[in-house]
Length: 394
Figure 1 (tube, rainbow, N blue to C red):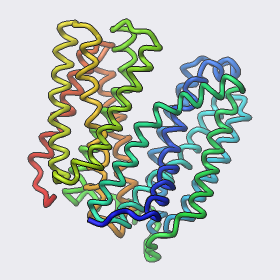
Figure 2: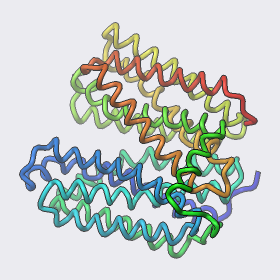
Figure 3: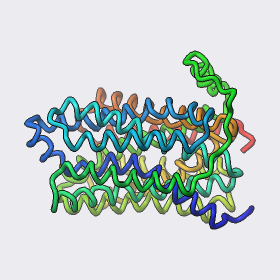
Figure 4: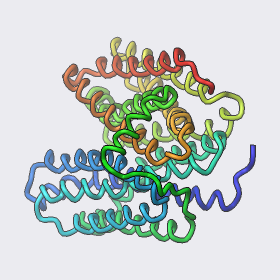
């Protein structure tokens, strides 16, 4: 088990700047929704559509940049994707119509997805399985920090400047990523024989689904990501509308649970990977989630205090920090040469599964939190079962 060198840590810091760009772009402008709606003279629900178009661009962009990175390496595609991100971020500064905001946000996400998908591919190509798990755990730590700091950045900017400068700040963050990529990222393996015809790319994507290991851990990772999104979209209702806590108290709850994800990722990178096989880490995480979700369901049904309900909620979120790096490591490990393609399909599958889960929940639910708890329990149980019944060399 070789230790990471100073050069490795510089590379990790560069990858952190790339993977953080997407979450920052999602959360930084959330506090500006009312001002954007006012200035563009549009209902706030139409501003919210720009978040949906961003997620769509994030999914489609990953499927585009993955094969590109397999053929041309990492640096050029990353620099091009960041250039697209900067141009579209600055375009949002001058937008006068909400429909153009939707378009620019889609293209902005298309740009940011390049860094996200290629960063995963770089880690998978360059490191062995143990180091990969450690590095993906570090990146998951960033995933826990971003939802905390991004709205804070947005609020600080709104305090002194107009909402347009939130997008200027996004462009500046991307500029930092460009500098770090240019100076610190050496190019990775290039496969010049890689064919970029659409039918060939589609065949390569379908071929990934022939690998049982990829299917298993992409599915578990997608379930985990959908749990995170369901948590984010429903916890305000549980804590404030049903629980009766204030928006300030909700902020502390959200921060505490984000720290839970970070704790899970930290434990995975430091302790768990040394004593447990990755598959057993998933078993542990899914077991904790099943118990926590069932407990939360019972507490909601019995209408106990919201403060009691927050305990199992925290322990449901914490294992996500264990699941994200572990499932990423196991899903991508068989595909060193096609890391970009595998990383792209892995990321796009997460967003697609989340979309399906959200649609299903919305069709079943009228705002009742017990239904949400049942869905979370089902997702956790599904992850546990599929991890148990799938035979794997890991």
